[in-house]
Amino acid sequence: MNKPTSFGIWANTDKKAFWDTFPDIIDWANKRKLQLFITTRIQSQLDNPDFDYKLINSADDFNKLDFVLSLGGDGTILSLARAVAEREIPILGIHLGELGFLAEVVLNDMFSRLDDVSNGDFLIQKRMAIKCSVLNENGSKTFHALNDVVVDRGKSHRLLNCELFANGNFVADYKADGLIASTPTGSTAYSLSSGGPIVIPTFGSIVVTPISPHTLTLRPIVFSDDQILTISFPNNGHEDMALAIDGQVSEYLNPSAKVEIQKSPFEVNMINFSDSNYFSTLRSKLGWGVRGSK
Image 1 (cartoon, rainbow, N blue to C red):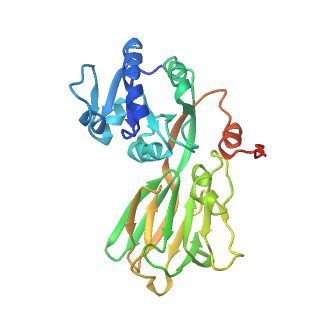
Image 2 (tube, one colour):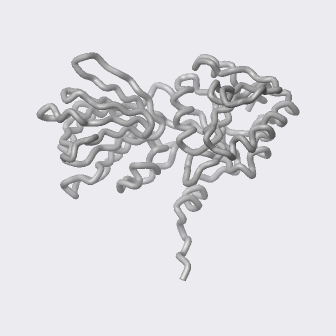
Image 3 (cartoon, helix red, strand yellow):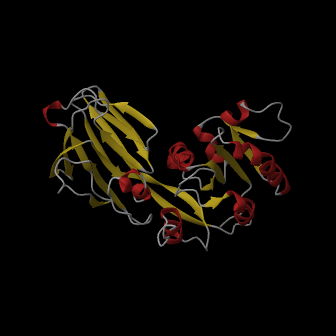
C-alpha cells in the first residue's frame, strides 16, 4: 500500500485512555512528518493546544486524509464508518472499550501498528454496509449501517407484527419483539445475542434475525447480498414502532411506513495486517475453548 502523508483522529473523548494517549500520538505524527487532522469535538476539549493540526469540519474533509485512526470501542468505529460513507477512507481501529470485534489493534500494540501503516505495510479489508430506506406517505429517508438495522416495537408492550419480502417475494409473517437485519460485520453484535449465525466479514450477505419471535420455528435467515428486503406492517402497525441504525441513530416509524434494506453502493475499508486472524479474534472475544474455573 502507499505510504500515507496525512491522517485524522476520531475518538470517544469520554475515554480517559484516549486523553492519556493523545500526546504520544501527536509526537508520533511529528516524527513521521504526517499532517494531523482532528475533529471539532476533540478541539473543543483542548486547552490552548500548542501543536500543529487541521480540523475535520465537514464530511468532505475526509477526502484530505489517507486514513483515520479510531480510538474507542465498536461504537466509535460505527459512527466513523457512517461519517466516512462513500469516501471509503481506510479506518484503523484502536480498542479502548470492553468486548468489541471491529477494533483491530489493542492499545499496547498501537504504535507498532501505526509504524506499519506509515510504512505502507498494511492491508485493506472491505466490509459490506447496508442501505436502509424508510418509505412513507411524507417521503423517504435513507440511512447506511455497518452493523445492523433494527425494527422493533419501540415503546409498546405489544408484539410487533410485520411481513418480510425478498425481491418482492413473500418470506414470512413475523410476530416478535422486532427484526434485525445485519451485515456480516454485524453478525457478531445484536443478531448473535438473538440467536443469529456468525458470518465471516467478507461473505456478502444480509442476515435477518427475529427478536423473541412468538413462533419458535421462525429462525434466522441468511440472504444473498443482491436481495432487496422489504419490511411492511399489516394493519398499519402501531404508533410506537422504532427503527435503529447501528444502535446509534433511531426514530419512530409512521404506522404506514415500509422499510427497504439492501446492500449499500459503497464498502467500508478497514485496515488490517498480514498476521490478522479473524478466527483468533472470535476465539479470544467469545472465550471459545476456555473452561470455567473450578
